[in-house]
Image (cartoon, rainbow, N blue to C red; front, side, top):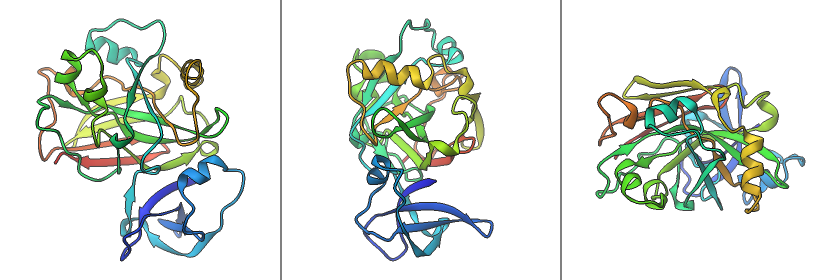
Length: 267
């Protein structure tokens, strides 16, 4: 399944539903029960939820973040060897975990605002793991771990550098786990203004998804709808020669095999 939160044409209130292929095109079906959310489905994927017979073409709806305000967003730093090299770091002995605030979650295709205090605004294309109940993986999504490199460099804690409002566009939907045979074998690519910047595979992860879950769970209970951003490969703006940071009007597109793509402009 592909689970989405969206606004249908002519409506104001968000709806939850499923994105399905029909007659060669992607269509969005809302759940018959209007109060049902994607978070509700993540908590119980075993029970089928009836959808409305009416649907909309994907381009007719406005996609929102699948879980609009996740309870917790765990980021993982320095989890690709090539990214370690471009950032001048050493391989950590255990996962480097940081938090992004719930309000950092943003729609997959909406503009992202760079705060005026930030001068070095950077992208990080990443595989997002979406948790289900009882430490299970419910599914996966595409994410951009947007980062203020100047704040990251001068502030030991990364809350402002990575957890600012809108600093985690993700989606375009949640692809449930049974649709992804091996999450450690997915091609990941990032473009900025049409220029390919990142081209890697999740096979290059230093710490695997089960290892990340086990490490986080040593101290923190993971709940349905929580996100784990698994790290970014080489090719970020900081790693360009010379460094190339995002500016107003730039467009970032991130695509992960089998999961779809997100694309957002910098406001």
